[in-house]
Amino acid sequence: VLLIASLTAQPDRGATRSRENDAGEEDPRSAKHQKLSSTRHRDGTGAGVEGGADMKDSDDLTVDRKKILEKLMDQDEDDPEAEPVDESSVKKMILTFEKRSYKNQELRIKFPDNPEKFMESELDLNDIIQEMHVIATMPDLYHLLVELNSVHSLMGLLSHENTDILPPYLHVAIAVVDLLQELTDIVTLNESEEGAEVLIDSLLEGQVVALLVQNMERLDEQVKEEADGVFNTLGIIENMAEFRPGLCTEAAQQGLMQWLLKRIKAKMPFDGNKLYCSEILAILLQNNDSKCVRVFKRHNPSTVEEQEMMENLFDALCSCLMLPANRDRFLKGEGLQLMNLMLREKKMSRTSSLKVLDHGMIGPEGGDNCHKFVDILGLRTIFPLFMKTPKKMRSSGSSEKEHEEHVCSIIASMLRNLKSQQRSRLLNKFTENDCEKVDRLMELHFKYLEAVQQADKRIEGEKHEMVRRGEILDDNMEDEFYLRRLDAGLFVLQSICYIMVEISNSGLSQLQQRVHQILNLRGGSVKVVRHIMREYAESIGDGKSEEFKEAERKRIMDLLENF
Image 1: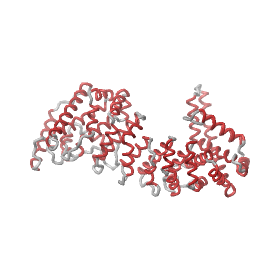
Image 2: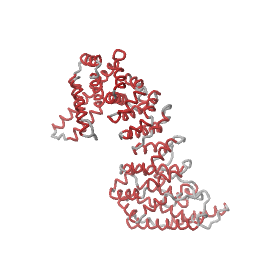
Image 3: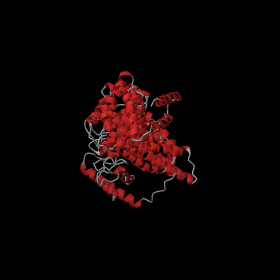
Image 4: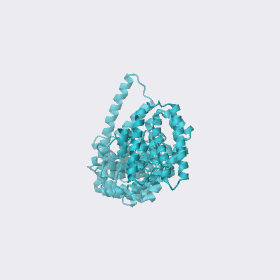
């Protein structure tokens, strides 16, 4: 019944992750396994299966189709039960694949202008590729694919020229992509680390990413099967990157980065492939081109998926800015101006823009960006956001705490990095309107101090309970507790306290007086602020040199002396 149905309707060769969540659409992964044994006989478009068939007469095609049906039905009745899959049968399958691949290549060379002559071998090749999906259930046998040179042969087929005689779902390159996607499924790879390592090594040695990119460039996403081929290709890259994160740089250098940016910026309707491209871009952690987020400057994402894509793009930009060398590129590429405009537009991209600015201005490497931000009148943008957290935070998928964390971190970075005139302009902002910004700063101080104190009480209770049970509080557990404190608001509190200490050492007496006045009125303590800053100084810097850490600690301690 399945074979008869397959001759009258083209099956969905879709991706393992559905690109569209249409109601009632069959899961392509389950559909794929129903197609393994009969792919070559599914064409309902009128292509014959015998090399010498007459392609001109539609009646002959109908007769041929009936003959195929009868033959398949007879085979279905006569075939014995499938033989068990083991190392011997996998070797046999791989050798059959090699023979059919060689035969197809030979016929293509012999009859380059007559596809009908090699169509039968094309179908045979597609059949065996479908059968090889069973190897994905046995990752411990992946070494056979490498030892028998099949990985190299499969990669060679990625550049396989398609023929218009066969429908898209029978194209060999798409079939290979489908197979590689399943072979590299992350769950399967984790089942046999040894087998996975051998397979991934072989793929990377053959520069599989470059071949995949070349194949995607020739696929027409207006054709569903080819769009699914693009989606499955991105799945291969995601699987390999998750199993071996170190390949991201290599993948970017093999043309993937350019293809992703081109695909994301293409004037095409938003779809699952565009979303997936943004996810892969975020994984690569190499994008420093802020132009790809420019589209969200003046309009909000129209769907949840498009919003997710926007956030992925901003995350990729933030990840890039963690590399100091990229701060200068961001500055020269007018990334600061774009982020500043996005903040003023009051769209959903505002919180993400804040996050990018935070990453671009933090640390001594962000000094030039801090000065430029003041020059482009960024203080007029950031301080209204400091004074009042926007109410419509839920619609952007961000929290009040996240917003306040980024704003306070940006101001703290500017106080640390700004010199001369730009620093004076920043400090003068705190004196405006009877030091209203100092009042807001102290309001945030007590808000997050209370949140951290509550978290500390919970953690102390857990520690006491662990000691009572005789459990050991090792360094890993202490690190986990510290991360929980940071998440509860300690990071924001540290930024706030740093701002308090900096403005109190600015030489503007009214600022220091106002800070101490509010501390006294609300029962605060200078000792608490100093303790928070000492703890911050001690935790400075993963990835920083010892000289930098020591200098920064001394600078903070000097500030505390005069607080």
